[in-house]
Every structure is written in C-alpha cells, then in structure tokens.
Length: 344
Image 1 (spheres, rainbow, N blue to C red):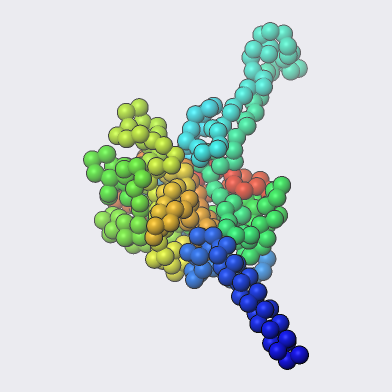
Image 2 (spheres, rainbow, N blue to C red):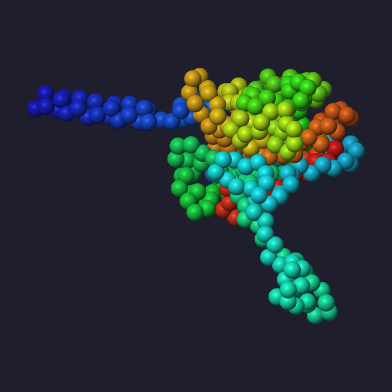
C-alpha cells in the first residue's frame, strides 16, 4: 500500500510538473519579455481608470502654465480629409458625407426655414484612431488581462474598464517637451529613414543637442518626420505604415519611462513605436503597446503634426511648452480623435 501511495504521489507530481512546463511553454514572447518588468497595477488603488495620468496633478498643470513664455499657439491634429490620411493597416481614413447642403434647397427637396435661413449638415464614418488620436488604456494588452489586471473579457462589445471616456474626463495638461529626433538624426531631410529605431540614447542625445532637460512627469512629443513624408508631394523616401520610424523596445527604455513617471508619449507616426521589431531574434509587433499601455498605464497618442512646431522651436530654441489635450467622451471606446494644443 505504501508503495502504491508513493507511486500515486509521484504520478501526481509528474503531472503537475508537466502542466507547469506546458504553461510556461504556452507563454507568449511578450509575456516572457515583460515577466520581470515593472507594473503600475494597483499603484493608485483598485479602481484606477487613468493609469499614469495620475501623475498629472494640479502641480503639473501649473508647471505647464509656467512653461509658457510667448503665448504662441500650435494645434497638432492632422487634417481630416474624406478618404485621405495615414491609417494603421485594417483601418480606413475618415469618410465624410454631406447630408444636407444647397443642392437640397435648389432642387426643391427642402424648404428654407421660416424667415429664409438655410443650413448644411454632414456625417462622418471613421475609426476612432483614424486621425490624430489618443489610445485608451484598454486598447492594447497581452495574455488575458488589460491594464490593472482586469480580464480582457472587459473589452467585449466595448470597454467596461479603462475606456477612453475615463481619460476624457480627466483631461491632459502639463509641461510638454518636443524631441526632434528627425532633425537630430535624419540628415539633410530632417526625417528618420524608414524602419529606423529610436532608442533611449537617441532621446537623451536629442534633448542634449536641443539644450533641454527632460524632467519627471514631462509629456514627451517625439518627431520622426514620418507623417510629413506622407503629406509631401516629393518625399525623400516612400511612406508605408509598417516601415515608419519609431521607438524601439528595450528594457532600459521601459524602466526609464517608469522611473521618470512619464504620463504621455505622443509622436508623428501611427504607433509611437516602430511597428515590426525584432528583439533578441524574436519577431514582435508593437511590443511597447504591451509594455507601456498594459503594464505601466502610460497613455500613447499618435499621428501628430509636429513639423510647424519643430521649425518654430529650431528657430527660437524653445522646446518646452504647455501641452493640453482631451479625447472625446466616447464611453466604452478604445480611442478617440483629439486636437492637441501647445502654447509656447
């Protein structure tokens, strides 16, 4: 009987070890990569809905105001043009339709309002991330949990947790810093070559060249020059969605963003990061979305028009400013169009 019990125990132990080994084997590459990396889950309580935006308190809003020196304003949204615009694969640009205009009156289909006033009306179909936009913290994840350790089932038919509406209710105001990596590393074109990686060293070297110090809780705006390439009639290189230059994953970069308490990273490309990346011989697609959004709660915002701001900053040497933006209050949404405003 003792031998039988021993054999049974050994069998159970072997089975458990086998299950454990199977579970490890089934881990995705990003789960393995991020296994020992920091998470902000629970840092601001169990009901946290805004992640690293918690860093943007009243003091940060005042710090943004203090960065204003001239009162000069820049809006950073791309134009929304019917059927035209850079979009991530699988999406389409905004579709804009007039539902009512002068033709309705001139053909007798509508009468003027009492007193003679006429008016137009229109509608748009668009991906909420089909123009300059902000990602919700539920927008990207890996495994079966979104930011905060909540089940990914919370995304089904709309986000029940960390939706874009939560970020919209908070709003974003703080000190922004433009890092013109395209100018610093892009040669004569002032644009990074397709598929270029932007590293932590590149960010630090650009800041040094610009004479600016990146401070804790700064909002980072990274210019690669990519979106300008899309809108240029005679670009220096072909624009494609999957070869846009951008941030590349490194543990040093992720730890630095965490240590610096960076709340928001925005860029003039589709994904902030380079879309396809190879890390230690393994292929990934948007790994920083997993590391930053899902684990740290850092807000990513994309498709900015930064060329005018960059040109002005190169002229006057001022790369810091007040940054403000708010997504639309799209309840349960995974993203929203925005028109960010910078005041220098």
